[in-house]
Length: 217
Image (cartoon, rainbow, N blue to C red):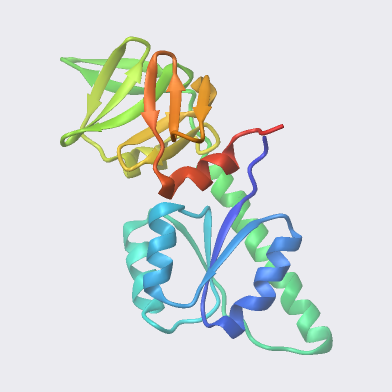
């Protein structure tokens, strides 16, 4: 399944309507927020691929500053102006080209190897991403389950997700990230995912995002 680019537009409602419609026509999964608190919630539970800023009010300026400092989400700062006639057409073309360029840059930066290394004792062990079944929180560590073994790394699930291919790995609860390719069964009634013999709970908060990411016939 080809996942649609996820874009969050930040700004006053009047400045987000036209970009929202334009991005939907381009086949993007679009959300909008006019306040920093609302944007923070969306970024926490369903982090977008790209944030497009169309205006600065209701704490958005400070929020964007924090995002840029953390350097965890791609931000495209657009100074949208109202225009008519040919100016409106030029503005729309400029907006589309800017978003396309930002997404292409993001895709390039997210190209990752098919494996990573983790420290085991005094050695670095190579782990292939395809072999990772799921990752769970264990105290201050994240336990990466590979086959019957697990490797503890001192990193949060949020930080690990930024380093993993988002087409393969998805967060399903506060304490679990799963490899979609390793899922054998999803019980949407009891909110449970089965990977081999392990049963992993699905949080209602993350269920919708999971369902968007699976191929359903």
